[in-house]
Length: 204
Image (cartoon, rainbow, N blue to C red; front, side, top):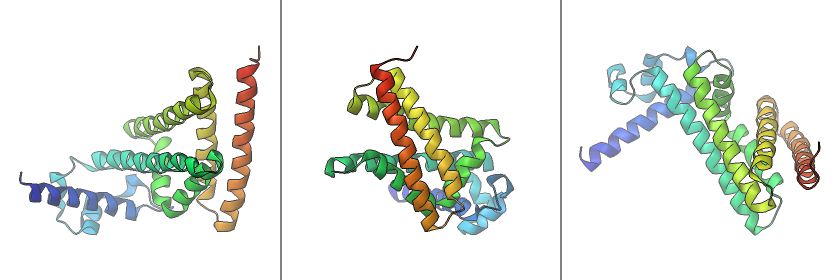
């Protein structure tokens, strides 16, 4: 396949992904989308869909992967900005809330499929969440000196808190989201302080 053809194929594939995401909403889930609808939104013939994905399930799994990757990339960038000054918790929470506000369909996808009826989709979302926990755990080990087990427990608690807050943020306006962000920041600081104390003085 020539370079130009490969680029065009990748462009069409990305267009299909964006077309599917554009049709998701508070009322419409991935399961309710049809191949023909997605193809029409992307501006291609339904038969051309199969040049890029085997079926809608493969497209759905790709959407989950893309959603997780996009969010993880943003959170990595947020942590890297700490070098310029600021609180890692504040910057991370505000970055996350901005993502939810700007990409509600993407976050709804992760939430819905996390507890959906499709086992492959549930496993895919669980894998993405494990990636979040692993990356945060690694960061905590590097910057706080706690051991791997404690870092993983702390990271898991933090990720669960933030994802839960993200679900609430979907139906909030900007002012309400800002108030929620402040509350989550305080909750995460409590978790971090508790983890620090537990690390120094293990509870029996």
